[in-house]
Length: 462
Image (cartoon, rainbow, N blue to C red; front, side):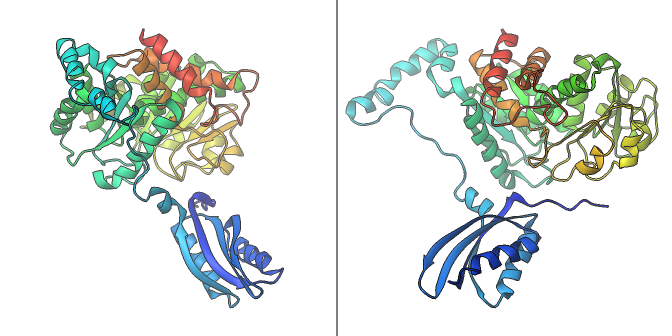
């Protein structure tokens, strides 16, 4: 059975309506909204006289259909007059979420002569004579390209570059907020691997790093590998490495809570795309005992027939027992379940068959592989990708600090040592004295995380 979604700020609406100016009117309004399943977060009086008042009611709903239902209920009430309904998420996105602002004053002719012609020519010639000076004298020092082809945007699929833009803008805003990194969306109207590689390579002189985002597997693997060969700046696919880093950090603390060691642990990982593959690779680097990779057709194993080279490698490289059955069998006796796949594919009865004190990371978003409530009946620790649940696995814990460290180190590449260092830094931000079953990763708003990750990555790259 599909779990009902909880109200969220992502589906928040503000309804402007007129109602009678009697003491009980506001209470009746809040009651109606609550009975409709929404959560009132604000009620502001806009105007009032001795008979009527106009208010802005803000409430969280569970999805667009629920927001429409709440609106219709209010419109049907005889003593409420709905004037306007605003979707707060769309208001946030009006005109985009980022902008460019000058870092130097342009107040007079002197300022203009240094920032632009004729003075700028001297800086150009200095870079022409020593290209490495571009990192010191241009935005390359602190700028990252957020590159996508729109082929695998969030859980929305192949929606194209224009529709991917709001996500890439949001990513750029997070870079600035948490890492003080200037990032800019580069949404490409092509899904041809050769074209993407050539375009990004041609754009690279402007940037100190490339963050690949929401590019479908398996093309994302080839694109990253080829760009890393061609460029002298770090190329980081966040769907792979950012996810893997935060999962490793969370699992490090989860194992501390249940008293298990990586080398003794068997994990079942469902979802063998970009994120799942990167998680498996990094957990192997961390010394995990064994992993059974599972995709939609069941466990990957050495005798399987497939044209997918990544799946073939995973089935041969992991799954020591060569298990070839379904997901339910794959989790039996496992210490850890990690899902980066699809909603509602794991049952509570499956978790009940796992090893003692099982750990469940159900990361499909917005609807996880198993309801957190159901998982918690059997699991010692549960994590999801949702912000309204404890233990949120969120890439923002990793990528701002990772790129801050790479830029500060003036790195030319990216490697597993830096990934392991970043994961350790995130885990240690919780601290052994504070870690518990509902606190295995720090808050995304913890101001200590990005600096700690940046310092660890900078040290690892040097």
